[in-house]
Length: 370
Image (cartoon, rainbow, N blue to C red; front, top):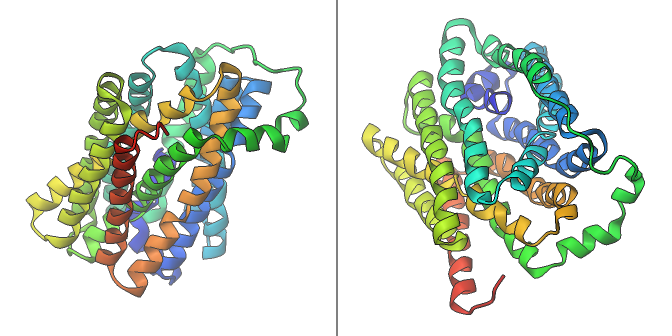
């Protein structure tokens, strides 16, 4: 998560150095998220064949190396390709780890919430650390901080985490990529509806993660350091929200909690775009952070519709599908900001979140059971 978030707080410095537009940076970030999404399904297949531990080691170590390449990029095309490599290597982790905790714990929402909150530690520390280093030494050393986190993590993980036997070591990789089982899984109405929920939520998450600091700097005139602090506040709210949303979803129902997250996002985006006061912007950051904590309420819906044997590759498959589409969040946000302004760009996200809340209300009112 440090690797994927280290770029966002220094977008203005990167655009200045390479002489490119927000839309161009948005394309690079969308490429990163697209690569992240594309490897979700293969990561589950590889974990079944080679083991969870191996996949995680490759992901964390590779992410650290890719961030060094981003930081050393001499021209924008190299930066662009390095960002895509970063997304692909980072993407190997999430599906494997989430499927693992879903197998180990009965309260799946709570378990996923606690697991996802680990990434929020990075969300809390990264913007402040990156902004401080960037102000003092420049954006390149700020992005390279990922290696200082990733390389020791690889050593500790390899040392302390025991290998686990792969689950499908004898099954050929070709059989795992047959089209028919994928189509069967994705054609289930409940899976399709959950894909819609996850797709919009992830689209919004990526847009906010890519450009919230830039919104605060360019629309409201705050310094990079203060924007980074508000970005960290957003992740604090998201971290607390991940755990709370998971617990509430297990106890009160997933759909009602999901709708509450989406509506909080609508209100939070309104505060971030319509007001300039620091207190209002802080409240808006908290509300949007809570909204982006939707995962523990939405993701268990997938596992409820899959058999135990389907979960590793199946969850990776649906992650790939909605992450590919959601990866457009960065480029769409950057384009709308360049063509109109940041208010229109973030307002578009608010409309999408409202549509999710409406679709959940219709599903409940008509008793559709999707």
